[in-house]
Image: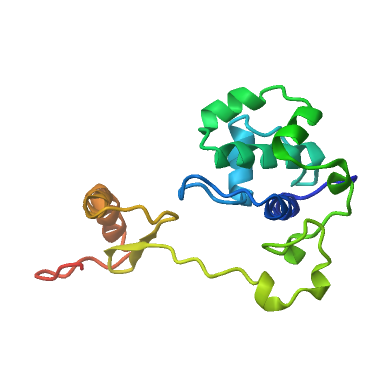
Length: 196
């Protein structure tokens, strides 16, 4: 990879690398490939280097970022915690990152793939024009939602909720609901009615 990538292109390149290496995550709470949001989180917390440069407001990333992301996912697949991974990768050279990630020089020098072209499985640098739409279409993601009041629903990016979590979330949201109702941003609760 001899070019700079946007965050979505970096995410796609990482997904391709991981699909070839076939890392399976030890925990269901850990995603197989990092999203743009996850990459930003890793940069903020020092797991991945800051962007190499910017073009306007667009952050640009390099091969080193790809190696760091694949190394993180490799170590996560072995059950390592992010704090341990951060310690293990701190100051790691590119050659060390390649060893941890399992990516070869040929793969990192291949032409970049745009995020829209990234297949979920298959060859690392596969020509996606030969792949049918069914194989590359992502499965829909179902996100849990909690109705807090009429016109106010909280959507979560986790499905690991217990009934006690739902009750706690609703209780914690009561001041927000009251404020939004007071300012007439959402409709006030009618007397004698209740929310499901």
